[in-house]
Amino acid sequence: MNNKENKDKVTEKKIKNKFNQLNKQAEPKPPLALHCTKAFIVGGGICVVGEIIKDVMMHFGVSEPDAANFLSIIMVFIGAFLTGIGVYDKIGEFSGAGSLVPITGFANSIVSPAIEFKSEGFILGLGAKMFTIAGPVLVYGIGSSVIVGLIYYIFNL
Image 1 (cartoon, rainbow, N blue to C red):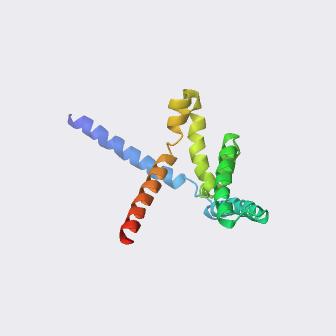
Image 2: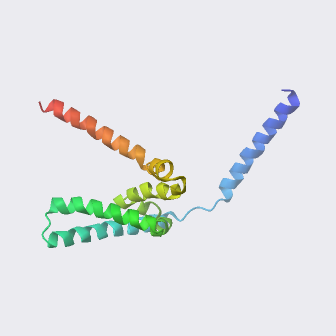
C-alpha cells in the first residue's frame, strides 16, 4: 500500500468515527421510567394470571405441588398459543422485557423461530430452528443441574 491509500483509510476511519459520535448525540434518549413501568405491569400481570389459575385449580381440589406443575404446563401452552396467533409479539412490543421474563417468554422463544422457519419443512425448518434461542438455555440448565446433583449426591454419601 502506498502513502496515499493509507491517508485515505485514516481519513475514512475518522469520518466514520465522527459520524458515529454525531449519531449517538442525535439519538433520542429512551423513556426509561415508562419502559420499566410497562415491563413491571405486564410481567406482573402475567404472574397474576398464573396465580389465579393456580388458585382456581387448588379450589377444585388439586394439591399445591400438582397445581404448580400443571400451572407451568398451562403457562407454556398459553405463551406458545399466543405466539402462534401473533398476540404475544404485540405484548412484547408494548412491554419489552416484561413479557420475556415469565415462563411464557420461554415458550415464545421456542415457538417464534419455529414459526419463522416452518416453510423450510418439519425437520430442517421447524425441528432444527425451534431451539435456536432456547437451546443454549436448556443445555446450560440441564447440564448445571446434573453437575449440582452429582455434587449433592457425592457429599451426602
